[in-house]
Image (cartoon, rainbow, N blue to C red; front, side, top):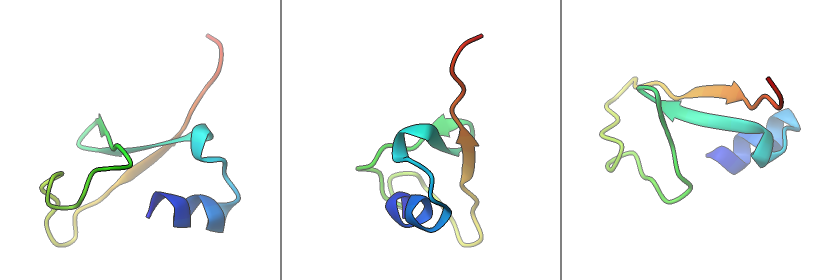
Length: 51
């Protein structure tokens, strides 16, 4: 899913973060391990460099 999103949007996988309930999703996570239910949502945030 993360690769498909990056491919479709042209984003680099290192430039975005995927989150569920504020926690970062790892590439090895599954919907079951994240306890996602039907109609659950995944947030996508762009990584920022600097401060």
